[in-house]
Length: 134
Image 1 (cartoon, helix red, strand yellow):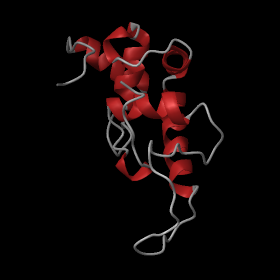
Image 2 (cartoon, rainbow, N blue to C red; image 1 turned 90 degrees about the vertical axis):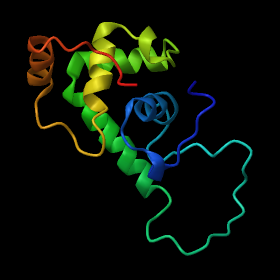
Image 3 (cartoon, helix red, strand yellow; image 1 turned 180 degrees about the horizontal axis):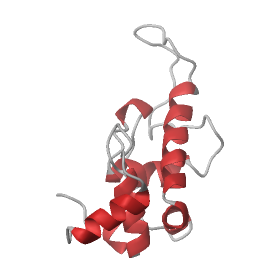
């Protein structure tokens, strides 16, 4: 479940669970926001000084997820709505359009080279089922 998970910006690998969590927890807030880990307070101490401002990595993750969602157009909007407004935290509950968008944007570190339309038609032509690999 989304509420039980927690990811630091450095832990985001752009896989299905990561993407659902970012869409549900990070995107509804202002740019630069990253939720604090439950039960941990910021003590201010670090092993070594960070080379980036605290808002940079959250902003990078947010921008990447937002850009990937834009590539899926209406299906991405459906995915966003279902996760944020519908409270969907479990992949199989998503409608087919939202599942397709989620699978397209969950491509790992690199964005897909195919357009969303090309990717959908290729999957349809090869009879691949829109499901998460276990």
